[in-house]
Amino acid sequence: MTGFLIPCDTEHHMTTDPTHNSAMPPRDPSVKNEPATLRGGSPVTLLWCLVAGVLLALPIGWLLATLILLPFMLGLFFYMLFGLLAGAVVYRAGRSAIPISKPRAWALGLTVSFLIWFVGLIGEYYNVRGYDLYLYGSQGFGWHPVDGDATRKVRLWFEKRSFNPEQVAELRSRTRWAFNEQLRNQYPPGGFAGFLKWSAQPTKIIQVPRVFAESGQELEPPQSGIKWFIRLAVSFVLLAGAVCSQILGLAQPPPRPDESPGPPQFPTGPLPGM
Image 1 (cartoon, rainbow, N blue to C red):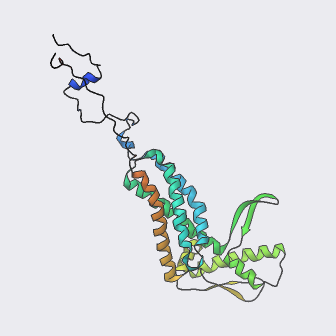
Image 2: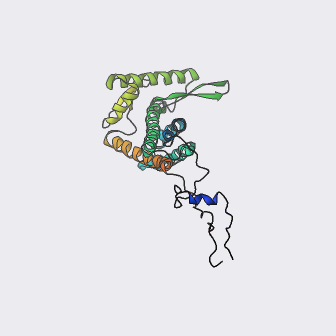
């Protein structure tokens, strides 16, 4: 009996092509042909990650400026906690760009960490000086003053004396002005830069007038000298470590799908023994 051929589908018959490599796994149809310039992370997506980090840096940094002054350096714990939170949010914002290059992931993580850390330093300055918040009050939205440590210490000295609203406003404004003037005179150029110089000195005391008394009120930075430098370094390391531990996940390639066996191969020649 003469042999016969078993018909074969044209797709399966492609194995006869000498250029075909049977050892190559089938291509995942979900992978798109993206330009090589986008495989390291789309610039638009990376910019969106940075915007998310900036939006998080404002409230988190301002909150850390208060928590860092907890006794026994307990505030450092919150640098790790909020760092993990910020890193997770930025990771979710950039998940569509996976995988990005590791240098870009490191740069993104360190940039977000520095923004949070720097906003925390600015918050420390305003926690001593005082600031105004745009809030909703009895007369609608408007600027409402928040007393800093300088004003609170002056008012505490008058604990048995009551003030009318005009006197409170005068005490607050003159105390803020006097505090800034002392920073400008003793630690030029004053302002935030003067506050950093003041904190870097080992326990330097400045005086502001008590406005309604002849004596002056002594002020000292919440933390100063070598203790302040150590706290700055440790807080940034903890914050950057927590943030980057999340954002570096953007540099990991997505998991590959399980390789499924190729289509069965059928003989194309005569059957043996027939």
